[in-house]
Figure 1 (cartoon, each protein chain N blue to C red):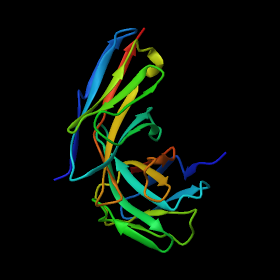
Figure 2 (figure 1 turned 90 degrees about the horizontal axis):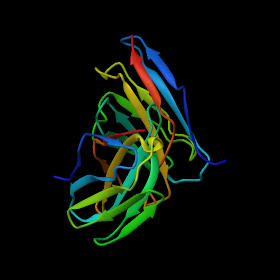
Figure 3 (figure 1 turned 120 degrees about the vertical axis):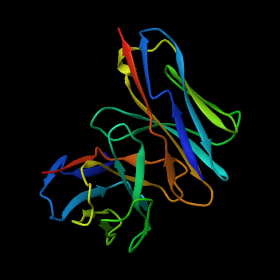
Figure 4 (figure 1 turned 30 degrees about the horizontal axis):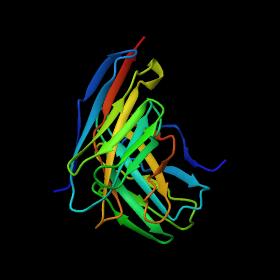
Length: 110
Length: 113
């Protein structure tokens, strides 16, 4: 069964304290893995797409990496404005739809 | 600016009533989707449409209905058959095979009173 698991459920960091969020997936034929940021009461905002193992993408303090079984979202020297829920989603080749994880709620304290 | 507009932002429904959530996009995207999100949970697919006049059930379609008469519009009706409709509803769209991910609207919070 295709599924996506994110960990931890919640993460509290001090400003400047780097860490990583994990997204483990099982899917029959990965077409793409996506990271989104979601602020409270808003829709998800697209961050990255990764297509193959070994691929990396960066945007400001965020860096996403992909292996055959999981993806990491590394946050370097986070700031309070990075506080949000980060969602991971995978797309399989056999269906044109996404499977979303339940997200990691990140809280960065000043 | 191109984007997806969902309305209303907040919606209240009495038990036994049907209610329709609006979703309009001006991105010229072929595919549109409806997701449901419950507190602390991920998004679950309700319905999706890859082309006008065609749509497919997602994982939790029971108690919901959709239409796709125009490329720009994909309204979702929450019927009285949906026993637990209180949730946050997200509409999204994508180009063709969604290789670039989704563009989401700002969501609608539905509460049954």
